[in-house]
Length: 295
Image 1 (cartoon, one colour):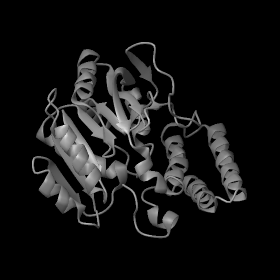
Image 2: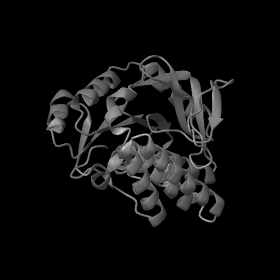
Image 3: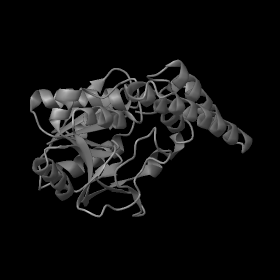
């Protein structure tokens, strides 16, 4: 098993995550860290604190999609093995990672498998996901009845992916930059007859509060905009879906403006404009009016 972890100016989170993973006894993964052009010297701190991990330096912030691709390519070049994408603010035990790996080995039709995902308070965040252009709320909130259950898509917070998916379907679409790129890969893999699944015998925790300062701007922007890229990639001739999401985004921007959430309203408006115009990739600076603030 390989593990790919992204870092952007978050050395403490990344070091903690790597040390936990390196201490697993049930599996001994190869650890790949991609530093997305950190500006605070965190890459040097990680190199010193985690000498056994492979550290990849990106000269620019490539977002989740581009940074993850660097890690995937390097990992698969070393050895063909399942790849666990793990957020640096997420936690998973070795036994849970081994459980996911066993599920992939037992069920060759599964291309992606995720654990149950919980927040810091122990509340269930997601048991897999729903198609982001056919659902507004994209997280499955109900526990599956069976140990392993099929879901439409998964997120990249903690997901084990069969290497054949990348060989047959390709890497993440870097035009997404951040958010929804895993859902797009899931939809592409489904055409190659791979399915996504959640294994309720495994769990992970995600400290979502650590990135809360970005959720009203960059997260809102990319989630709204990238739905239009999913539409372009998979529903190009479905005019009703395009019209629905355009109307929904316009209405959302208006509501946010009226209740005084001006930054979020602006982010949604920019997302709608860029999604319709086909302006994808890294748009951090225009959304924030400053330098890159997310990986």
